[in-house]
Image (tube, rainbow, N blue to C red):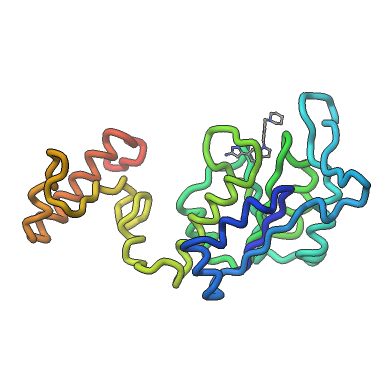
Length: 234
Ligand SMILES: Nc1cc(-c2ccc3ccn(Cc4ccc(CN5CCCCC5)cc4)c3c2)n[nH]1
């Protein structure tokens, strides 16, 4: 899987060389390239923004640098197997299903906007050529797309075979189908008693059936309290 990031802050993505994703890069499972969008500017001030047509506060990112970056990175031939992800507050919510689907992609290009956003014609042009995903990280406004791109990257890449040390843990995670889409149960480790708090006895019983039942109950109770929207039983 090749991941490209178009951004005016490429150093944001240096962090991807650390830990889990760092190993995936070292193993050649994932190939990461961050690009400074100003590479594709030609004026002395390396301008990437301009005033919004129709008025309004702030600045909007000019389309030209993005178009030239697409030309260099992707060429002009349509290719639906290339996924262009554009983090935006107005996108569809990024969910585990999106991460799962994108984990099968061979190529993903993250377009990280700043200012008040990117000229919409960039999205229109990209949509004619590649598979475009306008995705929101959540219902809050960030200063740009970089943090969202990092979060989405981690959610996607950890699902790629060979990236995680213990793939079986994936099936027990919140939102995963095996967990029936419920929130995951609380976890414990040693010591058995810590500052007056004990590990639930059932977990020390060695009775796997009881432990599994307790965990299912914990998941349902936690989901009922925190995320009733995830409960589908009629
Ligand atoms: N889930 C999530 C993703 C993002 C995200 C992603 C990408 C960019 C690029 C820029 N920003 C900052 C920004 C975007 C929008 C506004 C409001 N809006 C602007 C246009 C006219 C109406 C009002 C303010 C600032 C971004 C923010 N935030 N949250």
